[in-house]
Amino acid sequence: MSQTSKLALLLIVGILIGSGVGYIARGTQVAELEAKELKGTIVQKGSDTLLIVAQRWAEEYMKDNPKVSISVAGGGSGVGFTSLAQKTTDIADASREIKAPELKTARDNGVNPVEWTVGLDGISIVVHPNNAINELTMEQLGKIYKGEYTNWNQVGGNDAPIVTYGRQSTSGTYDFFREHVLNNQNFRSDNRELAGNAEIVQSVQSDTNGIGYCGVAYTKQGVSVKVLKIKASATATAYEPSIANIKNGAYPIARKLYVYTNGFPMGATADYVAFILGPRGQQILEEVGYISLVRVDR
Amino acid sequence: MDKEEQRGRRDQNLKEFFVEKLLFTSATISIIVVILIFAFLFSQGAPVFGRISIAEFLTGMFWQPTSVIKPEFGSVPLLHGTMIITAIAMAISVPTGVVIAVYIGEIAHPLEKEILKPLVELLAGVPSVVYGFFALVTLATWIQQLTGTTSRLNALNGGIILAIMVIPTIVSLAEDVITSVPKEYREASIALGASKWETIRRVVLPSSAPGILAAILLGFGRAIGETMAVLMATGNAAIVSLNVLDSVRTITATIAIETPEVAFGSLHYSALFALAILLFAITFVFNYLASIVIRRLGGSRR
Image (cartoon, rainbow over all chains, first blue to last red; front, side, top):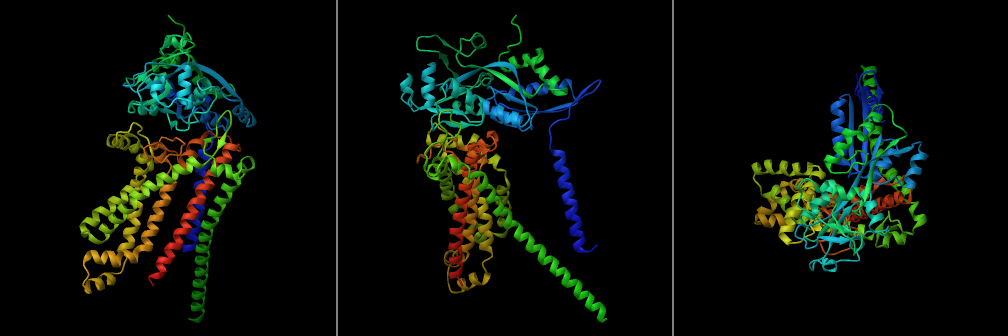
């Protein structure tokens, strides 16, 4: 074969391979309910708060159903909703409710998000273990994160600048915190915006002037940060984010955790959602540190 | 004989023609791709300027695109973040890089060169997320121990890790340029009685200056466009502060963080593209200025 023909052949083969790969790579899952076993792939994306428990759910479910493969990713509740609307995920994990614009975008794209409440979560406020403070009011917490308080001595601590750590705007925790603690005001400009709950805990661990917020599950595994007690007002009792306090509403910063699917799910996805809401899934939820709304207390 | 010769020559001419056209097409395609990228950026980013003025975008001091009360799209803190990190990185990497390049090119024994050059190029191949991870976990702690600061994710952290990433780029190219200075120049210099150091300073460096500048420019391009490492290392606080121990937020990190959640076609979406245009414009201007300097330096050598 001459040089030119060889080149041409290489080009054609290259194009064929490229388009073949592209064709296979698009699309999410084809779940089939067989007579005996479930099989298919499920994509689960979204909330970083739910990431630990989502991974555990996926692991346990895949043990029982080896023909189903579940891929779990984070990115934040915002990312989950965008992916659901673009049909690049089957399940969107979320630590906040879907917003009206996101709902509209999804519906415009032919996606009908259905909300499933999978649990209850509290937001822990963490500081360095050497911090003199043990509790804060909701108002003080809000002012710290809005930038109105800049020194620890304004809330009863040492004379040191307050360094705040938070999540990025893709995070459901960020949105929830802004809505409920800041009353929809802006975060202070010098708020450090980190990618995940674990990063916040790690940063506060090594910053004596730091304060951060994260899901309660992230303060479980023996990390060395101090969890503050929060009181609703200056005269109320200060509560720590224990399971009991979150469940009975005493701890002021609590929220529901959700997963969203496109319409009512079918096949393996339906079975997986049923697993999450069922006794095994809810037990895993509580083991990781969240609170189940479904299980009955004994 | 004649007929065959004619046919042979005609075949060869045809082949030449094809190769020439193929190469021309490849070159044009790359130029067209750049133009198309810019056109795409511009078309997606322009809508934002219908709602906010260019002045507001370029001089606004607050970047709060998801604010519930009033979204703000001021790019000054982001521009500041990019510039301060790049400045720190270049301040560290240019002298270090040139010195290392001179060492490898001029002073090292051939055996040392064999080991050092591949090692430096290995550093250039490490993925940026690995550097980011290192900066997040280890470098931040070192800086914290060195300066006693409590805010470990800051501009200095980002600048230093960026310098570590840029040095191999500069060294690689600069060393190639230095080695390619003709042997005759060095021999002539030594023949005239100059010492090794004088030769390097008066002959080798000036004649490789355009190439070294090109290497620095490449490093600058890498520094200004780096996303992953600075995203993990700088703390992402959109503020303007000349204190290098404060957190900053770069343009690239902003685009990387906010793109996954932005609604297609929204104002925020266009604003992110406007940031990309800004970055593109800065790189373009710097490249152009540097190419003028390089040409002038290169010309005076003739």
